[in-house]
Image (cartoon, rainbow, N blue to C red; front, side):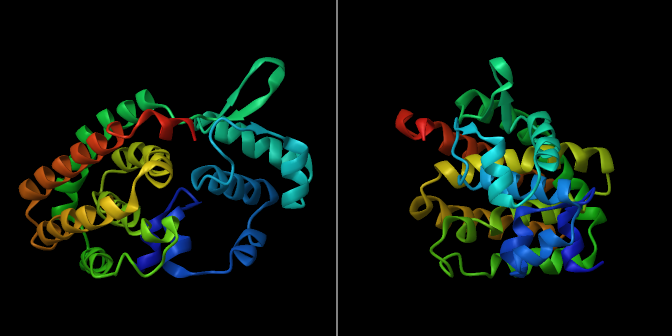
Amino acid sequence: MAVGEFFVVEGKTSMVNRELHEYDRGVALRSLTKSEAAYQEIRAQILDGRLAPDAIVDQDELSASLQLSTTPVREALRRLEAEQLVTMEAHRRLRVAPLDPSDVRHLYVVRIELEPLAAELAAEAATSAAIAYAQALVTRDPSESSESFERLGGNPALHRAIYLSCGNPILITVLESLSDRAERYRMLLVDEALEVPTAQEDHRKIVEAFAERDGKRLRGLMREHLIDSLAHFMASPPSVWRK
């Protein structure tokens, strides 16, 4: 299995692919259908904050900026509504989902239970290529780029490299549905200067257990890491939730 395959699930290109492989986004989007290209780009803009939390979504403006008709944009927004990244208000007005502490708690309650299970299964089922890729990720220098998207890109990449190796398609689907929603909070809320060094040490231990195929240890480390991540989010001052 090629490295890039770890980051495509049911046709969805992950956020991490853009950071790791440095492809020309314009070329990549032109290779998709119009509806899929609109979905990928609008979703990316929500996740990295270019479409700000709680902002009203102007479909005509989006269509113009993407150089697409309103039909593929409308289809993309329906998908994003289903993912709870946009919400429908009265008079069918769409708004970017706000940053909500209760949403973070709900996401992490599920992740804390299911992702450690996936990690334990992955310790047995992972290919040598998956393990080598995870090892390569933790040797990357998180200070290579000052951009928050680039700096934090290794975090979802590592989590995906592990849970996509678990061999359980149902578990993968559930975790993949949560991953980018959680990463949105991470990119928009986390204090990089404090978080990145701590996360790197957690990730180093996680990859060590993964490489040793020590499922029990890996499960425990992943659980602790996710609990710490939730605590970090919930310690954010009220002002950051109103970005």
